[in-house]
Image 1: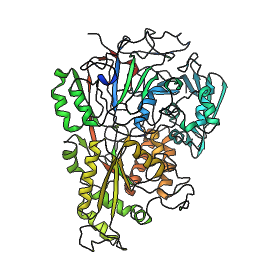
Image 2: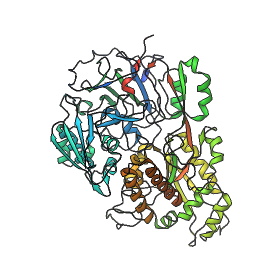
Image 3: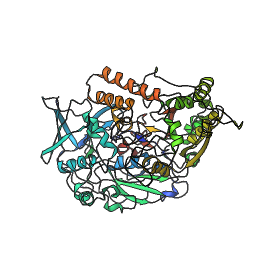
Image 4: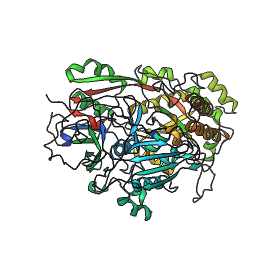
Length: 616
């Protein structure tokens, strides 16, 4: 394979992420402007730093050469948990770190092709296993320190650390074996794979390049996981991507500014990004974001509630924005039951014991129970009620919007109230005391709590809907809305939950190989039973084998067939109980040039380094 070079818009490459409600919204006054001022009109900026251009820049053929200045302000209903790209898992963090750090390659949402980033080119050796990546000379971190192969090797060392176990580790393992990484010189990185891999470029590109000269001491001291926390002073966070942190105010906002050493230029050799600031502001919820947009104080909105679509469609001219209809989203909604077992000995618990109450675990671990629960949920009724008709039923992370990977004929346990009741009766459960809820053979009421993030009104609405549906078959559900960061702690750290309703944001590119952290039994996002040392069920062992095929096969049809089997196993086991997926519509103010909203995440920010404020 010869070296490839593509051009196009900047994109942050991601593995599949836990999706919170990332809302594009803000008031101008919250970021220094007066009441009614435009969010893109930042306060007078300092003179743009003019650092020497790199010897080997990446030149992007932007649609229109822009001008410097202005800001784009987006809001999140949850603030970041970390600025450490290696440790970030949730979109409230990765939406920021994806702009702070770069990889060897990235993805152009417009052309839907991989393209060089820190690596200017790459080639596959004649053995079909050895890949050589050539780094750009002159590329530098935001403090001016050169980025070399030593930083790439350090980033792989972090990725492969079993104590840290960042999500990206699950992408860089094949058949249980790790890649052999070496560097013959400062600008060459060689990757020797244990077996052929059709996804080397996007998988290698998912690894964010961290500064060895800054973070190696923390790693050696065993404190890397807490490095680059949200309390770290911005001037101490050295980045490799197009942006660096200018300001962070906990609970309020995070302000990014251009990395003065970024290697990306436009065709006239102007250093990107064009904007002076990219601001992430925390807002209470989706309703607050909606009101700010209607008041003309918002640049765009990435998570419009479907009940408001009609208003946005009718007011485009008056509000000077365009409502982009992107079709079925590549973000999903679903819930699952806690099947986590103890991975390390703890007080009162032995390795292998269920984390949840053993009585509930016995229910949750029975696929018949999970199928009955799925069949009690009336998705068809949920769509007009919760989504105002703008959603589709969905049974996979490959939604109808993922045209290359979508399968319409998967195994599914859709709404069938009588069959759900029959399955539950077959477990020997009856309403023995006449309170309307079933009891198991020991007299325990069949009940569980369902957690979801309180800021997301759509998810809260779905959880209420599910509670009412399950009551019809005698299952008692108690809804427990919590803030998003608490929910992630419950999911990843303390496992204090019965069931969780959340979702996933598609990996970039939207290829199932980018979701290995979800589907592999060892994955950190294998939510129902995280980080298994070895598969705890035959079905999960089979999925691990199939993911190896998806990663290694050069034949698209072979990969598609393997992915279909993965989806069918997951659905047949009902580990995930799928809910409808929204039809994504996003409003964006017309004053920004080079804007190209995309159904592939991040829908509005994927080419933020190319956006500029058009002159009046």
